[in-house]
Structure formats: structure tokens, C-alpha cells
Length: 262
Image 1: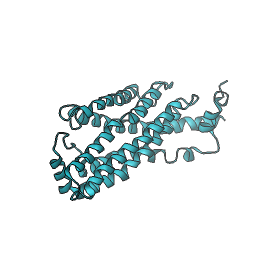
Image 2: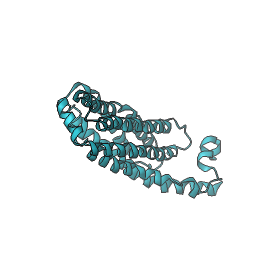
Image 3: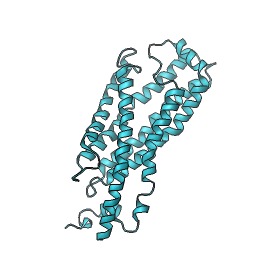
Image 4: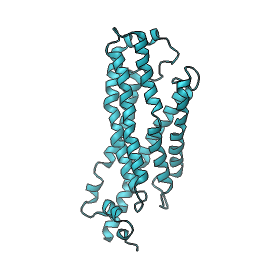
């Protein structure tokens, strides 16, 4: 009964399959894991600095003020949004690396939680990239679009990236739940990181209030809905990446030992 093949044949094939060497099995895992920090750095530069989204233009600004923004900074916004759409896709390989690690947290159980994480993390790319399209559209012909139209485009971008929050909450909670069920004496992810991931994901519920406020802490430029929520998410990316990179060599060692026993 100690033979893992007797517990879960699918888990055995996925993890212990002797056809693949350890080097081949774990190839690209670290590269994909490092795409998280690369995404974050590029996104902060392109989306945040060049796109003038750190901080966002206040929601109570007039259409004329939004129009002046696009008509003055159109080249920077074009470059920033093009870069955000390019580098935003790096969130996908980072998500896949997490998925592979999560599959092996509890090797002999089903992969429902890890699959939720993979789908939620992968679909997070949609608001990241699509919201940038609205800002890019505003910067494409700012001289001929009316101030009201430019204001609408800017609002649409923020409403999409903020209000699509729950698709990101799902994988964050999934990571935490999986980590908390790790049966190892020393879990791959520390308990506090798991609880942080769950809390950070659920904290996005405050975004529900954003459409009702144009000023104050719940507005898109407010300290809670912008500064707190985005910093929490950025810290989550760095934390998960750090402990994922620590987990991979441990998984390599575990698999090597198991292959020796087969």
C-alpha cells in the first residue's frame, strides 16, 4: 500500500513517470516562475509610469482634463500600453509554473484546486491586456475624439481592470488553500504565505465599491482601492515567486528519491 501507483495512477504517471529524467521533467519551471517578477517590473514601467497610471487620473476630473492628458502625453501612453499588452502576457507562464508546483503539493489527491488556479491566473491576463486597449485607443486619435469620449475610454479601462478582480481572487485563494493542506513536515509554502494569499485575494472585494465613488478611499485613485490593493497584489507576486523557486529544488529531490525506489 506504500506504492504510490496503488493510491492514484494518474498522480503516479504525472510525477513518477520514469520516462523523463529530473532534468527533463523540471525543465523550464524556473524560467516560467521568473516571469512573475519580469512581468511586474515591465508592467510597473509600461502600464504605471509611461501610461500615467501610478497614480491614476482622479475619477472626479472633468472631460477636458482627461482630454488634455491624452493630447499631451499620447506618445508615452501609446508606448506604455503597447508594452503593457506585450508584457502582460508573461503572467501566463508564471501562472503555469505555480500550477505545476501546486500539482505536487499533495501528489495523490485530485487536481481541482490547482486547475482553478491555472484557469484563474490565465484569465487574469484578459483584464490586464484588454484594459490597456481602451487607454491605447484614447491615445491613438486624441486630437479628433471628443473630451467625453476620451473620458469614457479612460473610465472603461479602470472599470475593467478593477471590476474583473474576482478572476484573480480565485487563484490567490486556491494557492493558499493548497498550501495549507500540504502534509509535509515542512510545507512548500509557509502557512503565513498561504494565509496572506487568501487574505490578499479576498481583500479585492473592496473593489466592488469603486463604481460608487469618484473621490475618497474607495475611488480608483483612493488609498484603499489603489495604493493598498495594488501593493498587496504586487507583494503577492514576489512572495509566491520566492517560495516557488525554493520549492522546485525540494520537489526535484523528492522525485529523484522516488525514482530510485521504482
